[in-house]
Length: 524
Ligand SMILES: Nc1ncnc2c1ncn2[C@@H]1O[C@H](COP(=O)(O)OP(=O)(O)O)[C@@H](O)[C@H]1O
Ligand SMILES: [Mg+2]
Ligand SMILES: [Zn+2]
Image (cartoon, rainbow, N blue to C red):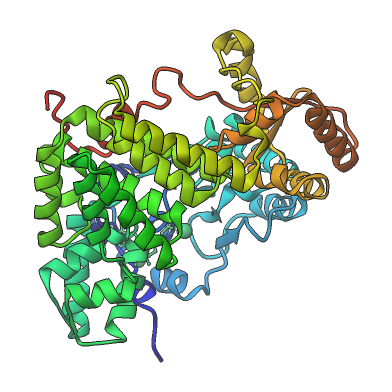
């Protein structure tokens, strides 16, 4: 029977876990010196080893002959846990067992001493999915854990956990795995599978996986099902990688301020049914690559592209002033936002391109370009008669200045008490009946309850703009929340963007890089 690669190659020992020494070394030391915690929290993005390490840890604490902090893998306990026959180790998927009753059952059971192993181990995966009641029940156990019980909580979304739970756990952060490390692992897996893989192909695959080993192995699985010799071209085809030549062409036109050519390319792509929002994203990430090349000491490792494309990108990066690259990212991002708010995508893309071809915003614009922009704007009005462009233009949204916010202390206090609001998806569903657009702006958001507030958290600030500027909408939302929960709540925001960093693509990028441990050259 065929077993998918990522299952087949799940590490069985800490020593086989790649790229997470801050976790594996520390755990091994604790195990060797017998300093175990009662609750562990594993956080980090998907496919980085959280579930894998939970399983290894559950064996290591119970193994009859542990070796240097690692489980032996051979004794009856290790084997039993691997086969799932030892009932003292329990795996709970909080996504499907998130109710208060599930946790109560667990609590009642936890008081009994383990049947065969030394410790009862509860692995609660996706723990952020627990309901408020379930969190509270879990908290009671975490406050006075029986000596023979160990909890391992795993989540990709640690910010959704109540502070009360966090403070009771020893926390381990799993990092995205570096492309070179993933590539090494892919090569060794190919070796075991009797498949050949080119170095470039392994690197490309690794880059596409964006730090997640699981994704890298899944993609490798798909490549292997097509061929026994994996080349870069195969990876590209399998992943459906787009040809980047149009991005290079547009960038070249922007660099030489050739707006006519740039618009021609856009038109050609449009006629080929290219989605303009997608194009805008691709261009943003292309300019981001150029910025990386100009910023990072060893950019090659971070770039998901062939040598040929890399050399071209390098040339483009060197030929453009740094400010221009950074400005372009800002302009493209705001253009994407306008597209999401409903602007005509093609026209928005054309206007943006013209703007990008205009030498630095402050300098005077040539009459030719000015009239071009004016023409385009006219078309926008004729085509769409969008109220935002007519004379009753709404006031620019008031900036979300510090003066309008609750004090930092109050926010700290509220966040400290916040518990995830399980009914939030239902609230959004109800809002959909009122307005699809409003509901859409809340997609991907979460909410917490704290004191008499519902605190909304979203990476997409549009929903906050909508709420802030529309009293009717706010009261509608409060009504819906009341109808769902039976309670009166005020609406608030869970967190505010850091003012200094907002919109500063460069400092954001630098911070991302630094936190990923990549050296950044501040002087370039
Ligand atoms: N750090 C790692 N080292 C080696 N393989 C890994 C690592 N992280 C993930 N994998 C591979 O990916 C698969 C899924 O990993 P898993 O631990 O379930 O990820 P998570 O729980 O963090 O989403 C594993 O079976 C393994 O094949
Ligand atoms: Mg997992
Ligand atoms: Zn063992």
